[in-house]
Length: 240
Image (cartoon, rainbow, N blue to C red):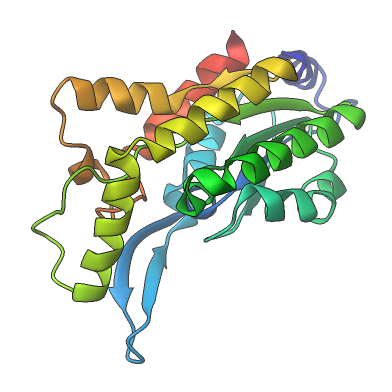
């Protein structure tokens, strides 16, 4: 990818080349959300820990590979967000920073709309890709993690358990699979590289790994350790 040439140029001549900027456009996983808890008003809130998000791990990896190169990370993840709203804020949250590479990851919230929302999701993804390509930005679409396949015994709150039953049904009924398949087709149509982390999660599930216990909130937020999978997978894709 062209971004590697920018890393090389900056490493060779730090004084006369700009820093490297990578933007991440996505939802709560991108923002850095983990466990859930109940507030005093009986509303569900999430634990925010951006230092353990995958983009922070990517920065650490590139600091190891290119210690002379400053890497600017633009965290454009918003908890609860979806692809249509991601497109609406693309200029404000991503393009305004003039990134060298944009990593896009949506699907976990979009799939809550079921089959009826699929076209809206794919149209928004294509709009994001087209606008980024018009601005000559490199893009990687990263497929998300799986959601819970069981109801974890660690959940001790009815509100959170009801949420987990909803996401479990979406996962087991193949709705999220359908969204990810459709996203892959949009990427193929628009020549956008795919970092297919969802396929890795599916492989783990098929190998009898308890997917639910790899989720910090036992619903849809990967644990801090599993965020390393995203980071390593993205770095591998960048070097492909």
